[in-house]
Image (cartoon, rainbow, N blue to C red):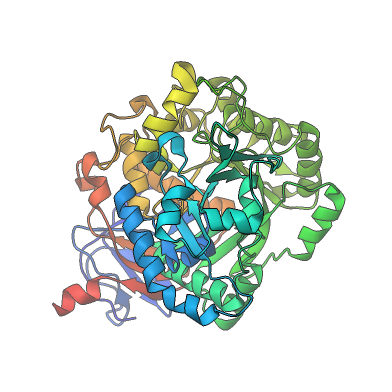
Length: 552
């Protein structure tokens, strides 16, 4: 590491320091100060009019999934349907050679990937007819950006045996036309009907996905994360072994906590806990001290669990994947075993079910001599009466702040389904903060961009420059910049039980991010323009956009 000395501002994970320089030796922070370094031989981070923060800690991300998808048919950057179709068309053409290679074998050359937006299709449901035109000879399965739906073509449905007589699996939805024929869009557990027929990713594929995902996160200043699903899920193989091997080889340059997956079909709770204990790792750069429950689906497909019916003509209360008894028994067993519990909860009924289950195990931040780190991610629709319970029970609200704006999916597929009253309950960040709730932040990448500065922009402004409607979404729920930065650094590091990430202190290994600007000097409406220039993880530079600038 050879860094020059320039003026900086520093946010240490809690507050802005009256300092402009961080010196590092052998990967350890040795001095935080202003002016010339005490020891001129020390290396010092370089910046002028910029901001050094702790490396961002993404508290809810799917790194290997995102990396694998970025190497497949990646629609995440396509804006609009026509752009998505062009990407699919180009990918099918570019990979046609491998189809010929597979001819005469039992292998089927699938087109896989994802990242499409539900807002690009009427009712959020694309059809097989579109894909049939683009890929008539190869089966296609493309996951939606939120990973709760799959877009498939006719050949994929034929291989899976899906037709008008196929029963809808528990917890799933098969989109059908008026005659009852499947149209090519599968939600939640129905995705597994097709994904079960997709060839399993090889060890090399998963390793490539992890390294690609890690590189992407480092580029955005992320030095630690919680992988929100470590287990076999929706056609993805568990990345557990890949993480272990990457740490052993030194290829894992971030600190990672994996949330071990709690399947939806668990019947023997004690046996499942025992199986998870066999995979628990409590030390090192990759730990598995968390267990993930997906309590419901999403509003867009009307699978988020609601306490009152959806406002659209379809009605319904959404989908709850676990009974009250199951959650209470499972949470008690996992808590007693020393696991932290990580919940996906979108609808108000799902958030309440999680809180009820946490309360049933003795709601407090501590149990015996162990401090708990239980949390609920997404917290999209929360009944105001439940907001104080987060702080009372010591439950962290894990925010995916980028979603708290009038984007097209919210406008077209959320507000009409929720109705006026529940639309006032969306993403209550300020209410959480005012109630004393511990806050963390994550991206849910590849569902949405892993760029922390875009998420922070939305948290502060309740709008996004690319939103369908620039008007702030419930502006009274905006949080200030300091609160947002704390959530994305020290707040998320708290969930990981990290001593090395989330803060900046002398004597600590350097996990730092250098922003292109000092956001405290900017108009809040410009926060999304801030970008990451340098990332130091584990005391090593893992991303440096300033090198090209210095050479040009």
